[in-house]
Amino acid sequence: MTIAIIGAGMAGLSAARDLTARGQSSVLFDKGRGPGGRMSSRRMETELGLIRFDHGAQYFTVSDPAFGEAVATWECDGIVAPWRGKLVTIDRDGLARPLGVRSRFVGQPGMSALIRHEAADQEVHWSSRVVAIDNGPSGVALRLENGVTAGPFEKVIVATPAEQAAELLHHAAPELAAQARAVRSAACWTLMCLFDNPLPVDWDGARLETGPLGWVARDGSKPGRVRVESWVLHASPDWSRRYIDLPREEIGATLLTAFQALATAPAPNLSSLHLWRYARSGCHQDAAPGWSHDARLGICGDWCADGRIEGAWKSGKEVVRAACPAL
Picture 1 (cartoon, helix red, strand yellow):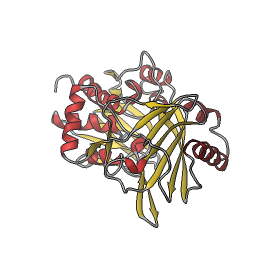
Picture 2 (cartoon, rainbow, N blue to C red):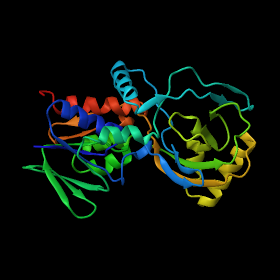
Picture 3 (spheres, rainbow, N blue to C red):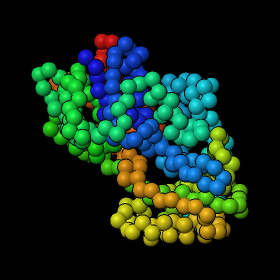
Picture 4 (cartoon, rainbow, N blue to C red):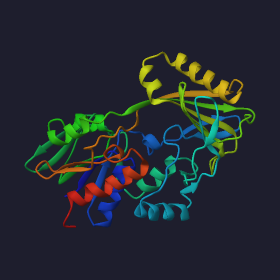
């Protein structure tokens, strides 16, 4: 029988590809309309042509040797490339210092390119939100939002943000649900802006220690992008949480005003606001990829690791090892 995976982000696709390598069939269900999730790229038609904004994950780093091998393959295939922009931290006094010398990689022409590449040879059902998991004697079935029941499947892996995993597993695997319930994700308000001319700053990305903004990046400085003055502004987690219900026009105006003060920026000729409710996965000391042999259910995701893209990739491999130890 086939193994089902709920969530076709980095963790779910990592698990699916590992299952394929072991000769085990799998099928993925994702509520999104297409590849990306929190690694999405927003496409906008402008007078300059099609512009992409990495409005979710900004880049990823490598520390694990196995993940490094995967990244090297993606780089050879032209799917990812190093981002060599100048990145800084701006402290409470407005002073900038280098963010660090670690290699940072991005998908090209957008972050979603990596998810699209990993999903290309997998069976993925997009726009398929799973609302319930039913465990029966013949296997595990999935109930979808549109009323369709998929399955039964031999096993199911849940690769969603912690809050969504806790809801899905509440009845089917209470111990896994409790693990997910202990984790809290952080929201993030994101403003995308396009300016006519280069802004007078000598850096391409900055992490801010105070104010409503937590991160800003010159998206056009990344490899494979159209070389325009496109910027992504992320509000800080604390600020996003505090003002998550504020009217959108007030959110956009506040973030833009803060950025204009930081970068001496004029009014943009294009802007768009987005709210990520589960932008950054919280970490919990007991969180780890888990498997319930009795329920035939498992969990994985960046929230099971360190909240990074590399952690999501590793968690998919780990849950497969637990689910299929004999393969």
